[in-house]
Image (tube, rainbow, N blue to C red; front, side, top):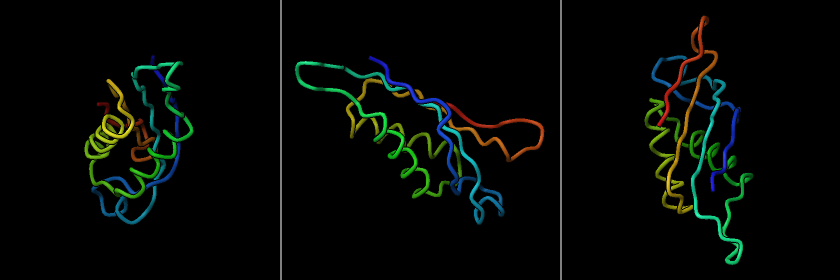
Length: 105
């Protein structure tokens, strides 16, 4: 089973530039979690909890690099939610005036 969340938008400290270290900016997260759904065992993933967890990891982490945030999120979901695979993308839509930048793991 695959659960996906697209366009999760919130503000966080994320970046190495001086103004990024002191001012929250908009972050957009897209994530897909591949897991073993089992109706008999009531095994599923609560997408509401996933969105809260992502926000908490990134906001609390105050990461310098998007790559660090990606690795932290992937590790969390693979260990705490026992997912088989995590595909996650973090974008920063306002850091450059002519494009959206980000990274995917």
